[in-house]
Image (cartoon, rainbow, N blue to C red):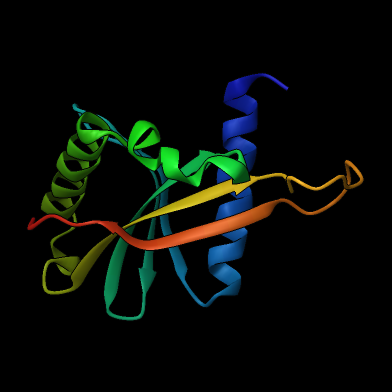
Length: 127
């Protein structure tokens, strides 16, 4: 599967997982002049900006490479852009999460469900 298709499929899978956890999807692939946020969800009284990454479960230590300082800055600036256009959410708390989606490092059938690792508050910023 092409990487764009694989990424979109991962984002859709992450959205279903977050919805099952009681969150409400507000937007997907939200774009601003400086970047994109994969998912924007509401988790009770918190607006959550979610980056979805394909991931090798053996390499969780590589978070810094997948979500480096520049990527975090673009996500934060895009969050500010979203909030400026959606003032009804301005009184709510915000959070930046990362959802990793990968395959089990153990031998498993290709039809096995992906391994999900949801890092709530993966990074912080005052917006």
